[in-house]
Length: 103
Image (cartoon, rainbow, N blue to C red; front, side, top):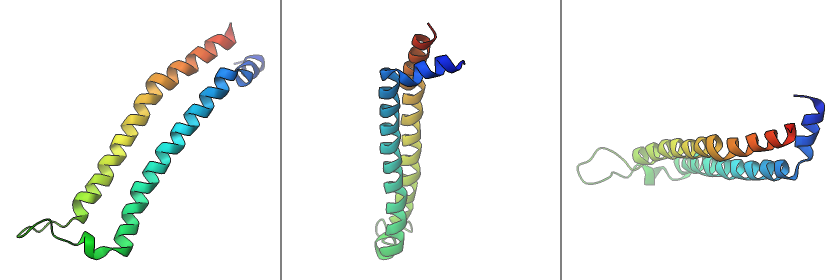
């Protein structure tokens, strides 16, 4: 890519809006991930008796196990959402901006 094309892309208001939207989405996804992981770790650190509570009478599994699995599933779902949006909406917008700049 030439320097002139690069400069046209960087100065395009659509590109700036695209970068802003993509960054905002990434930050929101990161915050959700941080809340899930650190929330679980903080719960382990400060409320072990709650996590050690048995799921029901006669059951061996405590509440902490399904919550840990829930954090992992939440991570997988967030990753899927991000990849889906990146591969559809973000890639399409990026291609349109590049095509516009190379005309």
